[in-house]
Each structure stands twice: as structure tokens, then as C-alpha cells.
Image 1: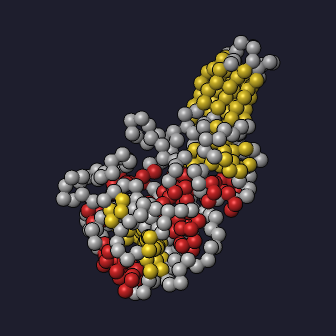
Image 2 (image 1 turned 90 degrees about the vertical axis):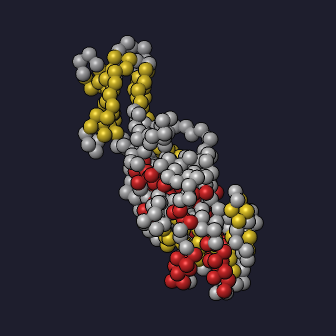
Image 3 (image 1 turned 30 degrees about the vertical axis):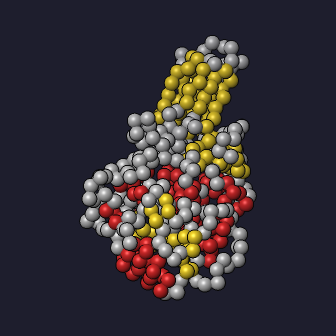
Length: 371
């Protein structure tokens, strides 16, 4: 580097180089993916200017800075975050996303030996279980970083996937795979460690937990008598049935079945304790299904909204009839503003057929095999 000029660099939201100083000079900056040798981006800048890659997901970069007029190499650096401060932000507020992704943060720390800082919207679930990770709130500013990565599903203003922030089409993958790709890791569906204080057995009788509500009607089990028949079957077999959904008995026109124990809204630790002692959990495509899985509770998932590969294999999955419509979640961007979103058959007799055609008997047969 020219005397009095300094090269500053980081890997925060992409690879970044800034040349500061008073010596007038033009520099060629190259960002190379060392896995392939490809020059992913290069640009000429002058002193007191900067350049950053559009690609933001993990890449083992090499930075080369040349004097432009004679191509003399003045500075080079190869990515190595060992013992350096790396910040990983989980950008989703959804419980299921957070649980599917979190364990990969510790995997990243173990692989690279970095000083890991992270933010989630649910730090309290993890903080005590991961003492080697520094937790910050999502809006908190973090200084002196070597690298930063944001984990989420990212779209361009056009509605297309932003492939500078996501490696692959996340709708074609298991939920956790997108986080593994962003962090440059192999995907392993490992349960995260979550805070789970044993508050004691909450009921004397054996019981099954259910969660019937979600954030869109497409995620519901839309068989109008399904939950009623399943709850009646469980009660006949001597099980209490505990409804964990915080939305209560009625929500957006969806009515909970009779003869269930309604868990009142409160701390998530109470829900976790119910799952700890439950014989089984039955849910739909919502965060409580992922929480049940994370707790190691036997989890039955009723879903036609997503294709079977979306969730982890050790959930017991009851899927849509393959001859009918299903998997809209994997085929289209979800319109979260449209509660009645059904991209193929909205306002037709086939609306929500993916789960409407899943019978109570199908679910009962699965329960009989696992209870």
C-alpha cells in the first residue's frame, strides 16, 4: 500500500475494502472465491473510496488489491475468522424458523473457532444453553466485527429470490438447509438445546397436546370435522387433550374441538413443560410443531401446505393426497397479507383441498401406531 494510504477490510454483509489516505492513486480490488478460484467481483477505486461484493452469504474470500497503473500487488488477505468476532443474525421472527436454524450457529463456531455473537427474536430460549455464544438483541449495534451473516429468506423488490443473500431456492429445500447454505455448512437436522426447566408433571392423567392455529388458513387442517373426531378418539382411549395454541378456542373463524383443556396464554416455559411430559403432539405447519420436535416430543404433523421434504424426517408426517393439489408453500411466495391465500384454487370448490381431504381416520391410524 502507498505510504500514508491504508487498506481497511471486513466481511460484514459481503466482502468490503476501503482505501483511506491522502496519496492520489487508483487501485484494482479483486474478491476471489477460494473454493473455485473465480473472481466474483472486481472494481477500480481511488483513495478514500470503497467497494463491497453483492454476495453476502458465507464465502471463503481472498482479497487482492493492486496498484492499477502497473498491476503491482499491494495487499492480499485470505478469509480466516479464527478467534475473530463474527456476528450471525437470525432475521426471522418465526419460532419454527428459529428452531430449525439455531443449531447451525454453534456448528459454524465449532468449525471456524470464532468468537460468535448472535441475535434472535427469542434469545431467552437459548442463552443459558449456549454459554460460549454472546447474545445481543436484533436492533443492537455490534462493533469491531470481522464478519457478519444474516440468515433468512430474502426477496428482491420484484418478489424474486435474492440469490446474493440466499444460495439456492429455499422453497425446494428442507427448512434448515437454507441456513446451512448461507453459513457454508453441511446440513444436519440436529435439535437445538433450549431452556426447558422441569416444572413437574402438569396433569395426573396421560395427555396429548394439540395445536390447531397458524398464521394463514392454508396451514390449517381444513377438514371441518377432523379435530373433533380425533379428540373424541383420544378421549375414548383415556387421554386428556391439551390445546397449546395461544389463539384460544376461536380464531379467524376456526373453532377448536370440544372437550379439550385450553392452556391459557403465558410464558413459553409452560408450553415447553407440557411438551416435556406429553405422550404425543399433533400439530400443523406452525412453530409449535417445531418446538415439539426440539423438545424430543413425538410429533405428528398434518400438512398439505408444504411438501414432505420441508420439515425434518423424524416428524411423523400426514401429507396431502398426492393426486390432489398440495405444496403451495414450496411453489409460490406466501402472501402473508391474504389470510385466504390459496394460489391455485382460491374461491373455487377445490380451495384448501390439500388438507380438507386428509381424513380423521388417516390421523387416527397414525396415532394408533404411535400411542
